[in-house]
Image (tube, helix red, strand yellow):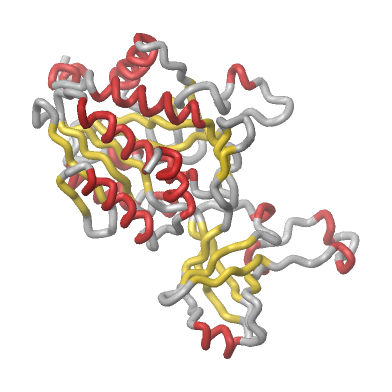
Length: 357
């Protein structure tokens, strides 16, 4: 399977928070193919352990499996489904979008209902329709038919968007790049390290339930026992019309290194080692400072006595919607950067990240 075929498979698989089984199966298959020791926790996270020339330090490379989605909360007597969000959504991106309702036996395609403009009153045209009033239409006549089909309250609902590489042969369009990209990045770095000596042990894979409060990130460190941790996640591209893309995260500018988010200020010495590595190997990179939102690193860095941690990723457009875009070149540079960084992370480097002076 080619790298892009793997990313396609990961993004087109369905897995909202708490229902990550399809993605976990793909990760297990890939990790077993690399003959790693499989590590799991009690909430569903999965990792593969690969020992290099030394057992220490232990390097955690973690994406997260879940994507933003919904859960069915009520079945209307006329057969419509009411829902609640799993993860952060902006109401305005939802209307008329296709979704998959996942039941125990089969999946159903639905659409988030909307009024045609012919029926809108003048004051309705300028209002954002609140999510609590939205519903999913699966083509059922009534509630009895919905129940006969096996759709129940509690069933997960996932956006629909096929994977596609756009005509520039670089822009990737897909759902769930937040954060199947991180899952893919962890797997690809592990593959590249197969024939590369590295003075440490790498634990690579993905957590669960990041989008609803970094929950898998709270349990994973007790299994992985990292000395150094990297959260692999997308950042927010700010390269829309009228923006100054030269000074803001944008597609094609290289991997993102996060200097600040709402959950963590990274270990500065680890951050600087990553920057030095990028510059030494002439790998382009971008800096992200984000005062809203966070990643699994917000939990990783607080494990036990503290774990030097950093977020490495790529810029993405339109995340937390049905679609997203990233740059293939950025992905390739991110793989290369992390491989080179891992090769530098020995016991001496770990000691330099401490505060013993």
